[in-house]
Image 1 (tube, rainbow, N blue to C red):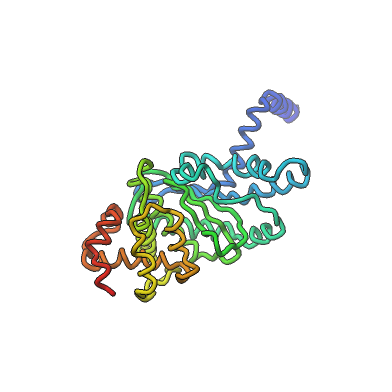
Image 2: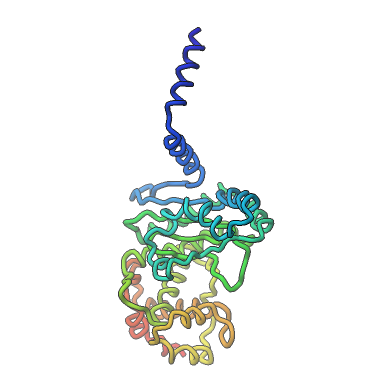
Length: 314
């Protein structure tokens, strides 16, 4: 009788929970598996890893069921809306881009599922956690840092990680990712994130020089956090034939051209701007070696270029 009485009590209790409350409980349970959270062991700086790909199953089911609804709408409702606050809310570059997402609704779910099947959640969490804490040891942040992970077919013309704004990093995870690539890339993007937090000014535009220096700082930072493991070649030679194409444009306010230079192609080697930016920063630090990453991060592109005597290296 006692067991029956307890059962009846629990049954009545469950019925008394409103549908809204049940939805809240469900969301809390889902978020516990969707988001891995931790803190820096010394500073208590907060970090969150958002496994967005876990929502792709809902997306796939919807596109099979609701064939009359545009996939962009389904992707928005099933994938982006649940993570919007964590991954895009108030993100400076997302806002500047006209609220354009870094990811698109996948059409080839067979390929996307193949990518998801290669993703080891435990190893991903471990690599990203290590990279965030190692990076924060050099430059702490006053904001939580969220890393959002999307399975993405490889495209050589697209970045594989993107800083959406302060504390918001998107990882476009491909079949070619491993733990070392994750760690180095997260260190790079973390630098963009903390620079944005401290120095981004939405009222001002950036010159090509500013953008080259910004990327150069991030490449320098990843080499400091993980020396010898950078995926950019810090020893790429100085070649005047390439710099001669870039130097006349340094003071232009043209972000599109800046990233053409950074990614390379046409008359420039692939990823040329990353290497050039790195060398711009290195030339300055070679004569200002006493500066910490936090100190040189705040310097303007103009100061680094002029005081670094970059052109004397040619």
